[in-house]
Length: 217
Image (cartoon, rainbow, N blue to C red; front, top):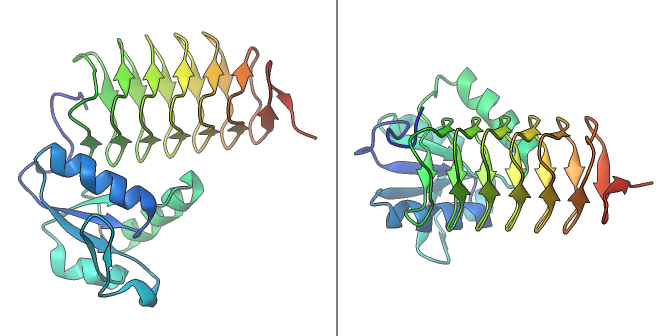
């Protein structure tokens, strides 16, 4: 779906699943975009009835969602694998309404597509014909250039830079300030370390670090 048409019902309120630091960031971005945020739900009973910094109330556990079937959801665990597991769990409970949250400061033309449940935080830039999958998290100041493809549940930390034609696999994690040269692949479930520069394909499930990035032993 293009950025010109937000996923879910734009007038519907949001519920954030997992009362994490990411949830607080998502709440701020959503409010700046004019979305109502009802609060968060979390599996940890010690969080229920509390209010997170920034005024994010924790309404209860996952079962609380049953009372808010009209809301759009955003999955807020920091790890992509946790978001994938939570998405599967919610599908079993019949939840399929996920909102795309895009901070108003983000830049992207109509040629770009962002999947359901994904989050683009402040200053993220998509240049042309970029495709972002479902439940992807892009932290502030991420830059994705022409024809990049980012798989479901991937996480791009603050300041990540992708050259043109890069393919990021499902569930990959790109650390803060890392860069990927054009036309390379970042494998599914792989990790590119903070500040690393990738100059060749990164295999599935591997962890590479450094400049240039190499396998972490």
